Amino acid sequence: MDNLKRVIVDFKKLTPEVLKLLVDKYPDGYDDLNVISFKNAQGERIEAVEVTTEDTKYLVKISAKLETTMANYDEDDYEDFDDDDASAVVDPDILPEDEEDLDD
Image 1 (cartoon, rainbow, N blue to C red):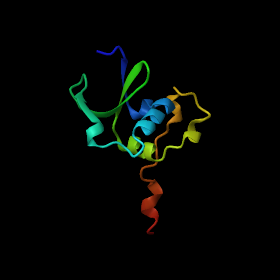
Image 2 (image 1 turned 90 degrees about the vertical axis):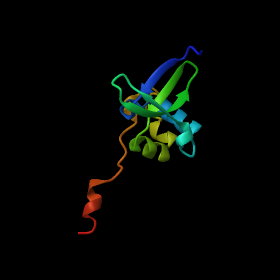
Image 3 (image 1 turned 135 degrees about the horizontal axis):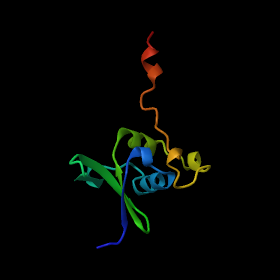
Image 4 (image 1 turned 180 degrees about the vertical axis):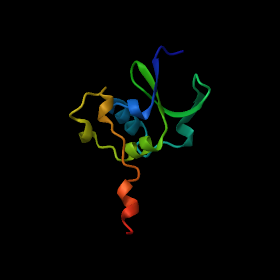
């Protein structure tokens, strides 16, 4: 058994370090074989992908925001932030509000 610290990460708590680990491990995105399913303390089913550092195993919850952020990842976007700064990774614009007005 490993002695790694285990951390479940929601998109709101995603740091540049963990995002880079995800993109490096899954450069073409993850698929069903990479997804880990488990129940949290509240009994809710959670799906996540795993990345590991020297001392920590991260389970990053899957979401549309995560997929979009990984697909649009550019390391330069995070160069002005600390690796552990969760405010660096912002919500992507999955569907801009103005898009529905384009037909008017």
